[in-house]
Length: 134
Image (cartoon, rainbow, N blue to C red; front, side, top):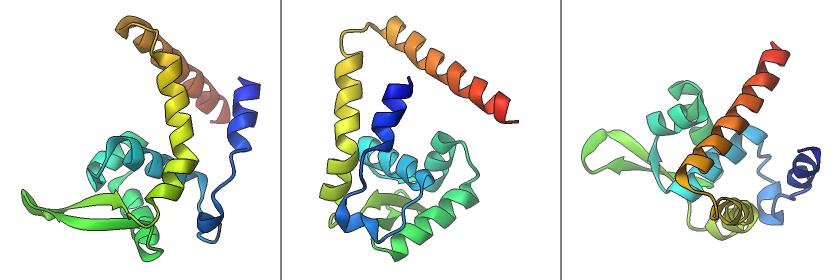
């Protein structure tokens, strides 16, 4: 685990994104949008386990910088759909896509029950760290 964390920390933010002062919280948001496609603010908030207002602030910040785009949901005009701006998609995909490919390759040989156990084990580890921080 320490080796894996060390490797992740060494992944450099692409040069074209370095001036945007992206924080770790942005990494998770961008990863969800890259891997799952455009999402609503409430969907992002649920996945990130934060309040929708927190996601709205992050999205607003990244939209001002041109990293994200917000569009009206055709099915519900009150709802905004958030996506990665096409101009930044190649850099973000190059930055985060390798990680997704590595996870897909690592999980491919596992059956559904084994994948579930793996995910639950990682979640328990994370909770253990969070409990220690509290």
